[in-house]
Structures are given as structure tokens and as C-alpha cells.
Image 1 (tube, rainbow, N blue to C red):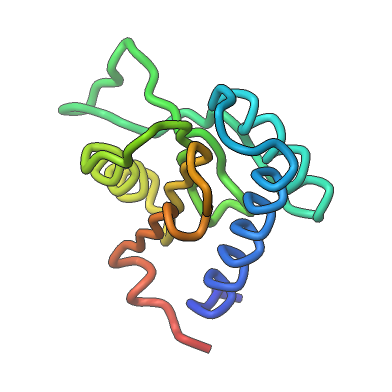
Image 2: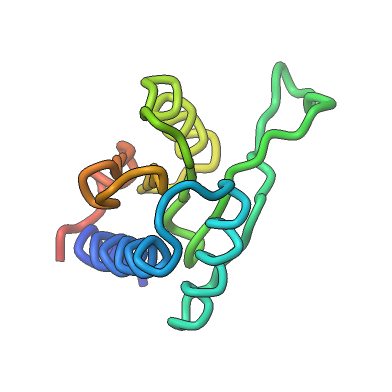
Amino acid sequence: MEVTQNEINQLAYEVVGSAIEVHKELGPGLLESIYEQCMIEELTKNGFNVFSQVPVPISYKGKQPEQDLQWDLLVNNLIVIELKAVETILPVFKAQLLTYLKLAEKPKGLLINFHCKNIVQQMVPLVTEQFAELDKD
């Protein structure tokens, strides 16, 4: 059974809820790695399948680069989460997440910045063509 856009969006909504909970508990100003550990704890507690520091599959002309490329979190093998604890979300962060999504063939990604007053206002959701091709319901 193939997943739908609505199911992915609902999963993303719940992931954002977990980020809000972590932010409410800790506030801004900590290291990204601390938020990552807490997100893993919160998401796992809520029954999600979470992998951290997942290698991004990349190849150049049939060869693997020596240096690994990793994204922060993968939830239910569908949503890539890139965490930040920065003053400003730069365009390069969005480009980075979009590239991760395309390389890994995942439908949706969330760029979540914990160095802010409001997680939802700073969060950037991104989708791929793979997402657009899924059924809505």
C-alpha cells in the first residue's frame, strides 16, 4: 500500500508537534546536537521510527565520495528532518535539504530551527516531485 500526501502531511504535523514540545521544554540557545537527542526521545516516545545521522546515498559517476554526507533525522522512512540552532535560516539550508530529499528519493523534508521564539514560524517544509505524484487521500 502506497502512502498518500495526507498521511505524509499528518506525519509532518505530528513531527512539528514534537519539535514544539522540545522547544517548549528547553527553549532556544542550546546546541543542535542537544535538540537532536531530545527530538529522537520525543519522536520515539510517540511511536515513530526514527533514525539519526543517516548517510545520504550519493555517487558521482558511479563512485562513492570518501566523505560521508548525513542528514539529521529520518522519521518513518518518509520525512527527512534537518535541525538547526541558528539566528537566521539561510537559503543554503533549504537547498541542502532539498538535495537530501532528491538524493534519497524521500517525499518531504522539514527544516526546523530551534533558535527562535516560535518553531512554526521558522520551520520550512519542502516537498519533492515524488510527493506531488502521490494520491492526495
